[in-house]
Image 1 (tube, rainbow, N blue to C red):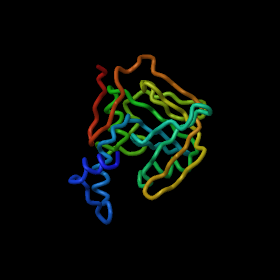
Image 2 (image 1 turned 90 degrees about the vertical axis):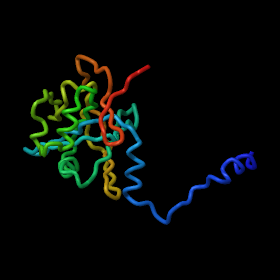
Image 3 (image 1 turned 30 degrees about the vertical axis):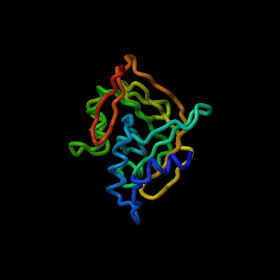
Image 4 (image 1 turned 120 degrees about the vertical axis):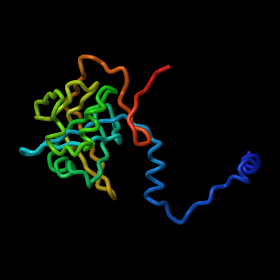
Length: 182
């Protein structure tokens, strides 16, 4: 088997540079498609939030989620200090909400919440009423690693929109789109 594999790739061996540039790495990561999620957070009388695609389930029992957040985000200090946050999994029709929380148009902090219906969990966490799924979470662990923080959250409450979305809002190669099942 090894002889055959070596013969197949003998003329196709990639050179490995001394180091990977941030731009080359970011370009490669643009090919990881992900569901757009709005992360909501409040602390004291301040509101903040961001759009993220680095969101994944950690376990079902207990229900736990992981969100990766750039520590240079304006929402990071609130998220780090609050202890509570919302994860709003967006449908294709919620592109404007994703763009608002990504800061498109220069919206900051509480301005990002305008124009969309919200519900609040018993703990005061903002959940998008029309999101196909929204999770109220309590921070259980944070790992700060390089430019990002990995925020683990215990899911306290799950909210589903009354009307299901036809497609999740996806983000791939620096653009939003939707999934079409065949």
